[in-house]
Length: 359
Ligand SMILES: NC(=O)c1ccc[n+]([C@@H]2O[C@H](COP(=O)([O-])OP(=O)(O)OC[C@H]3O[C@@H](n4cnc5c(N)ncnc54)[C@H](O)[C@@H]3O)[C@@H](O)[C@H]2O)c1
Ligand SMILES: [Zn+2]
Image (cartoon, rainbow, N blue to C red):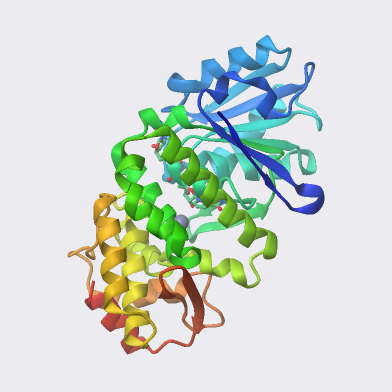
């Protein structure tokens, strides 16, 4: 059983297909015999899934090459981007070649950015293999690399021609990474959909146990929610900002403790609780709603307390450097009830400090 979601972006619309064993099914990739493909992946994923994908594509007459880069956020760099572009050039790929990103959000972001730049843009297919990339980074067309002076600071808006989500890939994903993806899943419930939040309260263990029906419903629904927000605001001028719930606080944790020590989703989990505290201090959210959010995060095996090694005063400098900050003013997404969030500007510094202290 497959589910197909069409992301409606006029000429740049594309399908997201969700199901089991899709790496073995040619039709979801929207490719044709005679075309040429370069697959970009990393050293962890290559031994697991690369050959399956190559064999399937070759069987259907698609000439396939691959480039394998090191694994990790620290490699989401200009150098890795250049490695992918060099592989395209070395194999004489043309403007009609297609780049496939096989991996998590790191591979998706850096390969997507390479596709946007190679010969001014070639077609690009996302095969996201982490829960986080399946529900978040593969929808919306943001691609980026990190710069020593800032994360995701260089990139492009660039949409794929299709996204293929093979649920089987999650079977090899470490549990901690799965939970990190669930943080973004829970985020969608908090900011946009109270019914979905209720559903998560019923099914969070099913998701942790990789129940196929629960996963496929959940991933489809998250992609649908994100696609709606993105369609309304493709280049992040307004509404798309609510997707950043917990991210401004979370980025402070990631930046201070070093990317990789706390996974992004773990930092977002704690960050969402800080944002919930901010909402409560502003009289916009009840303690009962905070408890529901916290309990769900705990059940998803996510952290709900701030890192003890990080002083409260160290958050603000990072938060003010966040790229979502508008001209020095602190801008935060705050949940106002389960299923709804608002963007707020100019929040008092003391409220921010108290929000951090309370988590
Ligand atoms: N473009 C966007 O809109 C967007 C949105 C959210 C996040 N992101 C980016 O995504 C990145 C985080 O993505 P991520 O959480 O997927 O991290 P990741 O790509 O680093 O993957 C996490 C780890 O899991 C491994 N892995 C991936 N799939 C696996 C599988 N099926 N089995 C076993 N191991 C597997 C990876 O090799 C890596 O070690 C960040 O760089 C973030 O900035 C982008
Ligand atoms: Zn995120």
